[in-house]
Image (tube, rainbow, N blue to C red; front, side, top):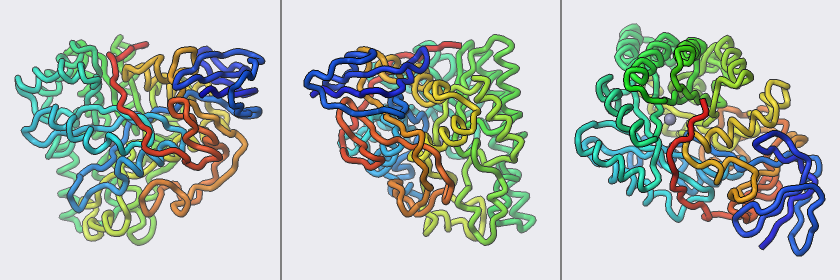
Length: 460
Ligand SMILES: [Zn+2]
């Protein structure tokens, strides 16, 4: 089966090119002007942007499985929603139980995802415990295509000590992988929550007060010091503040390899949402929290200057009724997380490209090329190039539409972007050479495959 994408603006690694692109089977086989049609099926992309399939570097599907705090999106619904937004590959976080092996988590995440995913997928591995058995498992993870890890400096049930973070940085670095870190100071979060509770301040408005910019900045600084000492490149996930960004800049100026991820919510929403009447603010409770406009502006400036490497969503959806409501009487019991994997490309196009902040080429690098490089998939994924996988998005830059929970694929009863006017959307998506989305509607399900990844490819 051969497909010819005609007359589009191809967003290639070197920049935009006005050309045609031919897909044969699951690969891109030809790029160039005026390619002969032959027996290919033609997709007319005139006036459209053609991107390599987008990669969401940060999802949590089917998290807290089997508990009252289970996420609303499972692997079937989450990956279908991702696909609708032009995301052809997600990287989700496998998380071992306390005292359990990495392999047990990898097996469990395969059980949940295999055969249920509508886009391709890989797994980051969360490190909670550290002992010689875990250390021994790292080469076996590499052999199974897991080359990226995560540690938390916050949350009592999952955070690691500085010593463990340091050991893990050294060991993962030696494997050619990369570790991302949730950078917030866990002790200070716990103290702030206790103080706010004692003061009877129990509404969602207290949430940002328990996750301050200082808590992020301290943890980013510490994480980068640990990385410096370990001599390892590092990733900072979901960066949300100007102060965290300054810490990363300082480390880069000293010559450290520091990679930064931020999320659409930190680029498009502000902390004023926590002041909404009633319990409405709960819809925006995530960690780190939404920030003041000044942080949003600082992050955009960093995106424009190429200081941010990836934009992942941290998609972690909880239904408002009844899951977010678990925290109606105490903000600290509100499950933290918001949905977004479906809307990332439209948000980045609307607020980034359409508003003139970034070019389509920069958007491509943030959503496809750099995720593929950092997480060991380039140029198999993340590039429109001969020989690359035929995961392709034909993006309509003129489509105007409104985000609503009513019409979303995400299996959750709200969206934090409700009512926002979008200027552009993924129109047609090819997944491994098969038409998976047509006119923004998913037409192919359950074709997602596990992506066995190689070592990180550092470019800084
Ligand atoms: Zn996350």
